[in-house]
Image (cartoon, rainbow, N blue to C red):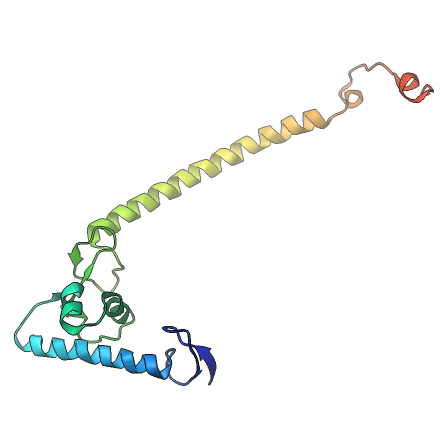
Length: 166
């Protein structure tokens, strides 16, 4: 046990069993009860599923809260009734155990973009590796003094310092 900030409201509380303060825990419990009661009524009527928007309108629970409860697996046994809204295109989709916030077509699009970005990143890194040795050679050539390269250089030390080097 110890003090912690509530993950919902930020209030400091003595943590016991939840990451929510007692007030937020009570609100969450009531929201879960509203949703599960609604499902129990319509389960008997053989209703297949509800969109999160419909569920929110009927129960008064915010869409974000329903999605959060769903994703945190607090609606056990009733997850098959919920259709989520895709965060990319807005279409309803039947979530699976492994689905995220996108419907299947949008997930495929996102995966394709990620794959293309990884490929372009790999190509870019390959180009950097190939060009780096050339840059190092050019830099070393510039750093070499004329004496090291074997070129003849006029000695103007008398003019610059007032004496001639031996």
